[in-house]
Every structure is written in C-alpha cells, then in structure tokens.
Amino acid sequence: MIEELANGDSFIRRLDPRGKIVVVFLFSILVAAANRLQVLLYALVLGLLMVLAAKVPVKELLRRLIPVNILILFLWLFLPFTFGGETLLYVGPLAVTREGLFYATRITLKSNAMMLMLIALVASTPIFTMGHAMHRLGIPRKIVHLFFFTYRYIHVIYREYFRLKNSMKIRGFTPKTDLHTYKSFAYMVGMLLVRSFDRGQRVHNAMLCRGFKGNLYCLSKLSFKKGDIVSIVIMLTLIILLGVLEWKKTI
Amino acid sequence: MEKNDLIIHLRDICFNYPGSPKVLDRLDLKFYRGNRIGLMGPNGSGKTTLFHIIMGLLKPSFGSIEIFNRPVKTEKDFMGVRQKIGLLFQDADDQLFSPTVLEDVAFGPLNMGKSRDEAMEIARNTLNFLGLTGFEDRITYKLSGGEKKLVSLATVLAMEPEVLLFDEPTSGLDDRTKATLKDVLADLDLSYIIISHEIDFLDEIADSIYSMNNGKILFDKEVHVHQHVHAHPHGAYNHEHD
Image (tube, rainbow over all chains, first blue to last red; front, side, top):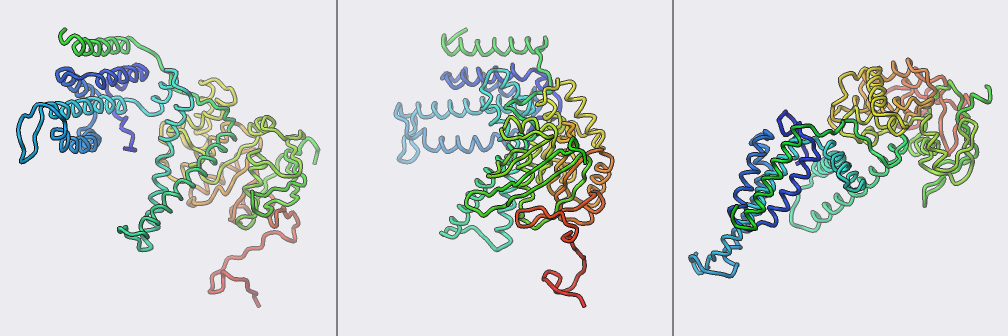
C-alpha cells in the first residue's frame, strides 16, 4: 500500500491530474448511486479499460483488489441469506433470496469498479502532483497538507514500528493471547503515537527554519492540453451516458 | 573584533523545559563573523536547546538575544534570522519532507520569495556544488543515510545563509561521507557552530572548541576538552594513569 505505483509511462500518466481527479470523483458518485446491474457492469468494464490504459502491473492490481474482495466475500456469506424477498433456492435449512443475491452482486460490482478507477488514477499520478492538483481544485489547504504529510511520514512511522517490533522480538517477545501481549502492544502503539507527535514537532520546526509561512509550492506546471480536453469530454460523456441509462433505463 | 562582525550575541540566557531543572543557566555567547566553533558536551547539556533558542524555536525564560546587532524577540523578528542562519537538524528525516530532492531543496528559496525558475536554478546549483548532480528526482525517503545528510545540507545552503548551525552532522555517517562533509565545510566561506562528540572531526574543521556544562559554555582553554582514546577494561570509568 505504501509503495508508490506511479512509475512507467502511459497515455493516462501524461494527462492533467486535475481532470483525472474530477473524472474519478464523478464516476464514483455515479457508481455509488447506480442500482441497475447493466450500468454497474458497464462501469466495471470502463474501470478495467482505464487500468489497462494506465498499464498497471497485474501483480500490483491483484495486491490491491484481493483485500477488498475478501471483505466482499464475507458479505456473500451473509447477504443472500439474510435479505428478505423472493426465495430462489434452499441451502440446507437456509433460504437464498433473489434480492439478497442481487444486493451482493451490486456491492461486488460497485466496489470493484470504483477500486479499478482509483487504482488507475493513483497508478498514473505521482502523489505530489496529486496534492497540487487537489490544491488547484480548491480543496482546503489543510486537507492537502494532511494528505501530503501522511504520505511522506507513513514510511518513517512504519520504519519506527519495525524497529520497535524488532527490539521486542530480540528480547524474546512472542505474541500470545494474554495480558502481557496486549500490554506490550499497547505500549508499542502508545510509543509510536508519542514519537510521531515529536516527529511532527521537529518537522514543523525544520520547516520554520526554512521560512515556512503556510504555503507549499509546486515546481511542476499544470496545464490543460488538447489531449486533456478530449479525454475529459470522452469520459464525461461516458459517465453521463451511464447516468442516463440508470435513470431512463434506456438510451 | 569589530562590533559589526558580532553576529550572535546571547546574554544571560536561561531555559528549562516544563517540570525540569534549568538546561541553560545564565549562558553567554558572542559569535563573530568568520568564527568556526566546535561545541562539545555531555548528552542533555543543552547544546541542541541552545541552537533552537538562536533560531527562535524555543523561547528563553530569561536573557536577551541580539542577532546582527538587533534584539530579536518575536516570531516575526526570528523569520528574518532564519534567512541568515541555517540549522541542520540531527535527523535528516525531520528536514526532508518533500517527496523529491529538488522540491525539498527549492522549498527554502521559494519561501524567501524567489520565483519558481529561480528556486529551481538555485536548487540545481546547490546540488551540483555538493556533488549531488542527478539527484533532483530521487525520492527523499529512499536515499541512504549519508545522501540524506548531504541533501539536507543542500536544503539549508540553498537559502544562502551567513551562519550555519550543525547539530551532530556526523552521527551515523561513514568515513567517506564525513570526508565529503569536511571538504564542503572547507570550501564554504561561512561561519559556523558545530555540535559533535567527535574530537578528531572538530579538530580538523573548527578553529576553537568550546564545551558545555552546567548550562553554560566554557571558553577557558584550561577546561578544553581532554580526550584520549585507548582500550582497556576500565576505559569506561574514571581512572588515572601512572
């Protein structure tokens, strides 16, 4: 999760990040609101095409999709049996309902379509560029800074966690289900929090020493080119078409 | 020394962290242009605190600070100070917060109001000067310890300070990076104060070595650091030689 995916070159990578963020945002709203299986299926295909265009390695793609789908698997264990509606078949004493099946299918399609689109976005945009694009789009500065520093320091905190874990290990700590284990983990988490706080203070001090006045500047220029406009128009048209299909049930 | 050459003048500085005894106790310091000072002292003797007070990151409970013959008290006063005095933090991870090297080095110049192109130009030149050509697009957290240290030095040098404060610049560095650091310091026409525990390093790059104890700086030659390197079972304890 921590590793940056954005490497390699692709057509999508060269597009303006602002356009990409807006498209993904609108796409997500549509998919979240849509209910018709046909629309969701098209959305999933669209997501797949984007991931292909962004040239995301299959291994990386699976690494990100599998955790989401494991969660969805649990929904499949419960939803078909617990949702009221027309009974389709029986598994032992349990009734599987038509509505339950549809509901689970919808959730599966929705989550995967959105994940694919997000992966395509993240894989084709360096994090720093993304932060600046968010800023240009008018997202409050504090949120952009939060996003940006979380990304930068999650590595440092991760390394700190690793060091603490190793120092526990070399002193013979093996996690068990007992009070000692819980206490030790609690200490470790507490220590991580305290250290992160101190780290934050020191980073802020270092920034003040270099004249930080609340502004982060972007070195790369963002500019809309012809390709950007064409891509945005195509994507928006597709999203609108999906919306019409959902609403009118036909095009 | 001329009064104009007096860059940092601390008088009667007292400081204590909440709930702890005084770290600095009526400390005096006069630092002149061209001074190259090494600062030694046991852990917790207030060396880093002293630096943070000079930069205005900590406020002394008593005493006065004059920098370039002007009293500095408020945050606004210190903003000016920070353009002329650079502080190199002990942990480079505290200093490097941008994803890429170029962005981080350009951060200071941009804050000083330089245009984007000027800032990039300054950043590139500084990196070249430190032998870090080609590092522009490297990811900061993926650099090695030595590279991080040099890049953080670049971030400070890019602001073209007149004085540098180094907080244990050699800790965790290998001999090669230490040598690079020494060469850079010799090439720079800057005044600096360096905190270090390495007497050999300070011997080579500092004109005088001060030590800190009991919240004060000791300038007296008599109390100059006395360190001898030898290995025997009692090395860690106080002992006498026949």
